Image 1: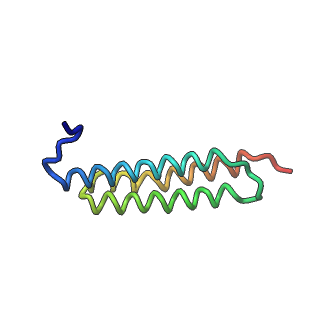
Image 2: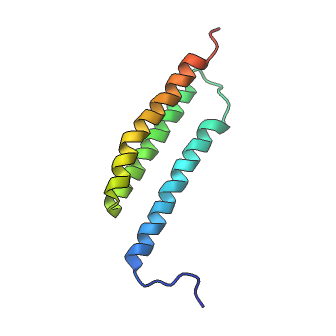
Image 3: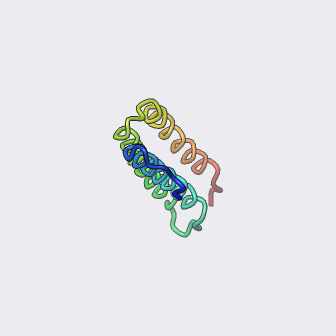
Length: 95
């Protein structure tokens, strides 16, 4: 007795790739929140790495044929990164 009935292997591969992309985005978000700010501009480096993971996920969505989701993600991801960077820059205490 199998838990997943594999009637269409391409659909299964697409689902696995989408789950991997989702995990990468979640790990990037956790990475931003988890580590202490020991260096002066470490937050901007983290946002840059998260942006690279976002672009990789967008490319994966395009390959999988999820064009509308990729387009929405392509538009919203840079706004999100800019909002985080802007809040960090104006929210930090000036020493």
